[in-house]
Image 1 (tube, rainbow, N blue to C red):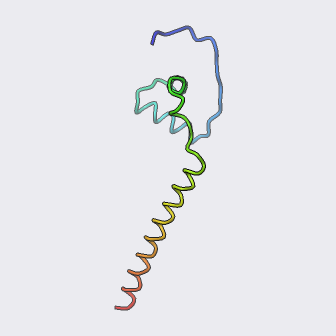
Image 2: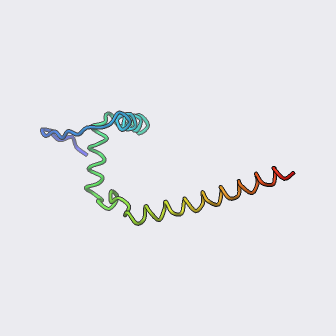
Image 3: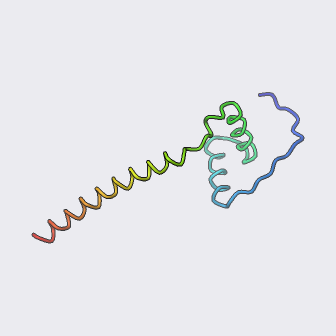
Length: 88
């Protein structure tokens, strides 16, 4: 991509955690700055907007329900192991 004259500025605020994670991503990917990272991400979104569509609420709930079922099975298994140990 040829460097174009950049005359417009966009500004947004980040939490300390977000900024730290963005800086880490810059370091690991070789991106020069958080600004460059944001510019690359927005351009990638413009090329393929479907990549940035958030999961539907129903899909997130379904995922959480699945995880809760797995957790319940783990707790049940742990409870059974404790009962076995206590009866020995």
